[in-house]
Length: 480
Length: 136
Ligand SMILES: Cc1cc2nc3c(=O)[nH]c(=O)nc-3n(C[C@H](O)[C@H](O)[C@H](O)COP(=O)(O)O)c2cc1C
Ligand code: SF4
Ligand code: FES
Image 1 (cartoon, helix red, strand yellow):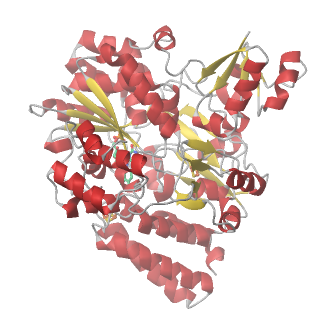
Image 2 (cartoon, chains in turn red, purple):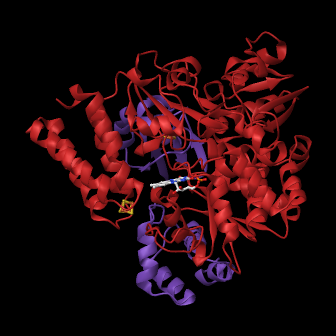
Image 3 (cartoon, chains in turn blue, orange):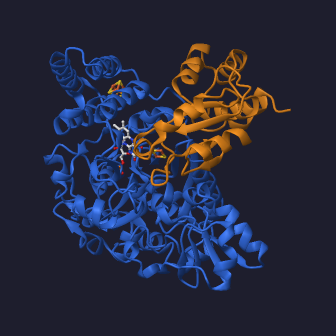
C-alpha cells in the first residue's frame, strides 16, 4: 500500500509533513505528490484512488483501520470531474521532481514535436491554438513569439514571469511546485521556436518551495533541453516587478522601475536583446499544445478566449482551490456552483477578480462569462484569473482604502499620479470614512481616479481606480 | 566565515549579478550594511548610490540588523476576506517577534497565512497565531 500526500505549499502549510510522518511511523510507504488543487481538503490523503480530507496525524489509525470517512474516489469528485485539465493534467498524480513520472505521463512530447516540425511550424501551432498571455493582458502568445523570432540578434532570451504578485492567485506556484518539468519544457520550446539560447525564470521570493523545486528540476533536466539553458532568479518583494519591463530591470540588477514602451521587450528586452516575456501559465500550456496540436487547444473556450484557464478560487470560499476550465463558464457558476459560496456560510457580497487591480463585482453581475472581451466590456479584469470571494461582513470602504494603500506601497515611483495620487487617495478615503465632507470628497476621489487612470505609465497606477470606483459604485452605502 | 568578497566572486560572472549577491549577503549577514554596499559597489564597478538605490527599492532588503525572529503575516485581499485583520491586535500585543506585513503567499484559499523563514502557515486563527508566536 502506498499513501499519497502532496508536498505543495498549501499542503505543507496545513500540516501535511506531520501527517506523512505519522504514516511512515505506522510502517506505510508514503509518496509525496503534487496537489490535486482541492485546497479546502488539505492535507488530503490518497490511498488506491480514494481520498481522505483534512487529515491530521490523529486520523492515521482510523484511515489504516478502514473506519475513517472518505470522500470517495478523488477523480470522481465533482470538483475534479467537472474540470478540463490540460495544463493541470498531472496535478495530484505525479511526483513533482521525478523524471520517470514526467516521462511516464507524456512529458517531453511537446519538445520532441517542436524539434521534429521546426521552429516556424512550432510558432504556427501556437498561433492556431489561440493561446493568449495568462499574466493579465491577454496578448496572443504566437504573435509575441513571431516578433522575437523575426528579430535579428546575436542573443535572445526567454523570460518566464513567475512573480505572481496578485492576491487570490496561486496557479503559477502550483505549476512550479507540482509540475516543474512542464514549465521547463514550455520554456525550452519557446527558446527553440524563437532562437533563444538562454531562459530565466523570475520567481518571487515569497515562494521558497517553488524556487527549490524549480532549481532541482532544472538540474535534473539540463541535459534534455541542452544547448538551451534555464536559470532561476529570485525577486525581492516588489509587486511592481511582475510588470514585464520592471522585471527586466530587476533581472539586470537595477531598481525595478517600469520602462516606457516602445521599445517592446520583444525587440529590446533583457540587456537590450529581443526577449519573450511570458507568464508561467502561458509557457506551461505550450507542451500540451505542441503534443496535441493547436486546433485541439482552440476547440476549448469561447470567442477570442481560446483554451482553458486555471481559475483560482480564493478568499472566503467554501471550496477553494484550482479549477481549470474552458473559457465561457459564468462567474456565478464558479463562485456558487463550484466554489459552494462562502466558507463562513454567510451570503456572498462581492468578488474581486484579477488581483488587486481588478474591479469588485457584485452577485448581480454573476452571469458574466469568463471571457477577456466580456470582462473588459464590464470594466472588469480577468487578469491571472484569481477570484477572491468576500462575505457580507466586508467593509468596502476599507477595501477601497486598501487598494490605494497597496498602490502607494508598491508604486515604483516613476510617475506622479501613481506615486502621489495613491497617497492622496488614502487621505481622501480616510476623510470619507470619518464622515467629513463626504460628497465633496467622493467627487475628489473620482477626479483623482481619472487622473491616475489616464496619467499613469503602467497598470499599477492606471488600474488601481477600478477596485476603488467599483466599490463606490456597487456599495455606496459603505461610504456614507 | 563567508565574506562579501566570497559572495561577489561566486556571482560576478553571471549576467545581472547584483540581486543574487544582495540576497546572499542578507542571508549570511542578516542585513546589507553601508560597508557591504560599498564593497559590492567597488567590486562590480558601480557607484555606492547605485547599489544603495537598488537595496532601498526592494522590500526584502534590510539596511539595519534585526535581532528578533520575523513573522511575515499576509495582509492582502484574500487573507483579509478570511479575517486576517482581526489577528493583527494579537500580533501587535507582543514585541518579542517582529511581525511584518507581506502581500500574498499564494495560500489564498487557506488563509490567513504567514511565512517564518521558509516555513509556511495557513488557517491561522487567534489560538494558532498565539502558539506560533510563542514557539518562535
Ligand atoms: C503592476 C503589474 C503587475 C504585473 N504582475 C504580473 C505577474 O505577477 N505575473 C505575470 O505573469 N504578469 C504580470 N503582469 C503582466 C506583465 O507585464 C506581462 O504582461 C506578462 O508577463 C506577459 O506575459 P503573458 O503574455 O504570457 O501574459 C503585471 C503587469 C502589471 C502592470
Ligand atoms: S503607474 Fe506607478 S508603478 Fe506604474 S510606472 Fe507609474 S509610478 Fe511606476
Ligand atoms: S492573499 Fe494571503 S496568501 Fe494570498
